[in-house]
Image (cartoon, rainbow, N blue to C red; front, side, top):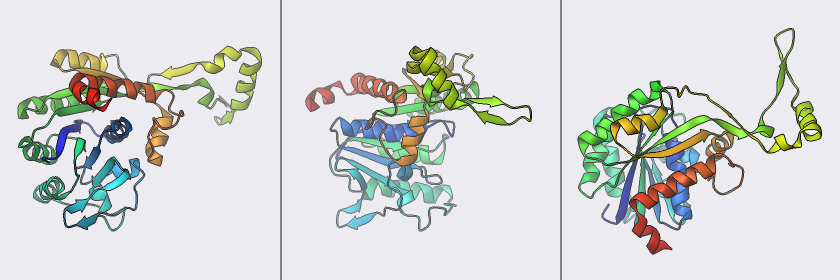
Length: 300
């Protein structure tokens, strides 16, 4: 870890909020800025990072320097227990001490080389893996944690506990990201259906698109937004204000981003993620500007 300049934890008290998706896209973005980046997946029981980086089926190799990360690009290396499982459907049924031992090995025995950033994708909660990673990394310093949530109170109740955890163990909260902040996509990407008398859905998408092209072509450029999770409680922004931690921004629920994660691709590489990529780019630029402006200047 002595050769790693900056270490970032990606946390959330709640599962299923898109933490691994954010970790993957953050790593892609930092690598695209020409930083040397490592992505460490410490979700021992549910490793999804290999899938999200397009590295399924890859294996870890050992050299005289230690374990070698699996590389997406020359400046983006990945380490996960997912590379060690003989079968991707294999369940990892381990008690805490064995999990802690593997995390320690990941930190001690993986030869990352000189890294600008190590992004650590953690499982949900505030227990074994979280205590271990904080204790092991504190000797060489942790820059802080990014906390991911969705807008509804059911998620924020658990995420508040994660903020509290960070404060108790002395980890700086770099900011909170509100993910899946409303379904948002171009109107032309929607499927339109009509309910029939028998209760079935008849697809009328082609007719609707043709009608818009003919009668109202200005509608074809519209972005349609719908609230999926209830944000009437004020969402992550209100929580950040109450708990005095930075709010980094909102990322909409974008089917194209979900597709990029499924395919193991960067949402910034193509123009398909027209809704989510700009939101993620703004959040990551704000994060870098707030915390590592000097690094940015040196790279430029």
